[in-house]
Image (cartoon, rainbow, N blue to C red):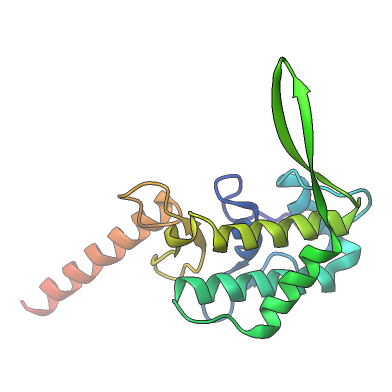
Length: 188
């Protein structure tokens, strides 16, 4: 199996990290194109289902493409395509959750619990996470990274945050520096 290094994981909402498995501009890298990579991605994000997820590659990529499309529409302030919205709603409906009350340590706590198991539960959780993101208070902080060649989404959790990751900011500063040096060299 070929080793794969996924884009940054563990810093964004699940649906954002899922959309970021289609990375790059022009000819993007699809981190979900190989069944082993699918299994590895779900394992690394801590959302492994009972059984191999890679067997559902086509369905997984369909959901990822729908999540990517609605997040793109949101950051571009345009309506999402109805097919993407329908796909998202279908995945969310296929894996319903219920709110449970737990009473531990003297205080009531609510917890969401999946009513199904396996890949449908995981994919439904991703779809639900996307819907909650787009309709919740973090929606206005959803961004696409302006870094050179980067297409990753992120939720701006700090007023000064501009890039998906500091490495993108570094590449952007390097590119500007290079352009200034080139311009100075041409004017001599």
